[in-house]
Amino acid sequence: MNTSTKTPAAITLAPLPYAEDALEPQISAETLRYHHGKHHAAYVSNLNTLIAETPYVNYSLDEIVMRSEGSIFNNAAQVWNHTFYFEQLSPSPRPLAEGALADAVIRDFGSLEGLKNEIIRASTALFGSGWVWLVCDRRDHLAILPLQNAGNPLTHSLTPLLAVDVWEHAYYIDYRNRRADSVGALWDRVDWTVVSERFCRMMRK
Ligand code: MN
Image 1 (cartoon, helix red, strand yellow):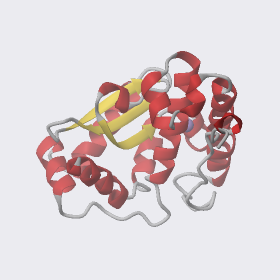
Image 2 (cartoon, protein in one colour):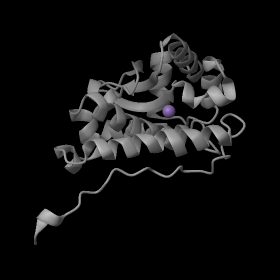
Image 3 (cartoon, rainbow, N blue to C red):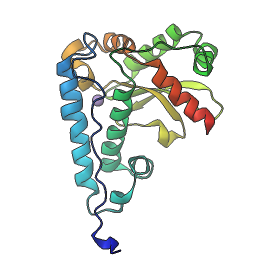
Image 4 (cartoon, rainbow, N blue to C red):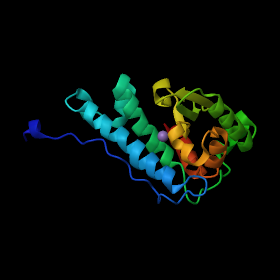
């Protein structure tokens, strides 16, 4: 087979896993239309342009995030981060059930409310644009990791469990400058079954 004509698979925009208005009132349809349809889509488009004619075109998105820097890293990580972010939200979010993750949350934050407060605190303390992550280290300890810009826990050898987007584009239409309020509202849309599955998948590795 002549592989020289093989076209590498382009990085694609993961479809929003629910309707644009499905997370109202916490997140408006207008916000999701811009956040997914414009911002997330632009990172995908930019990344495909940047990696064309480079070795990265043959890498998976995870590999690009792990191995790149500069503009390619920024766009690749933003693609990764947004897919992860949208996946964890739900029109009918399921609560945190008893189990390994619930035990770890109680051990490391006292309660789910304690975790929420720490995430809101970290979100307001993060200067500029970035992400606040709930992560797990190799000893199964949970921690909150604020990272500026497109920062991603994979490059810190940490497993991401939950992503809070604190770029203004994530909340400014609905909440203007009230970042803490936007994170508090986002909390009500987090599907803890998704977060627990991420934790359990990591524990099995
Ligand atoms: Mn965003």
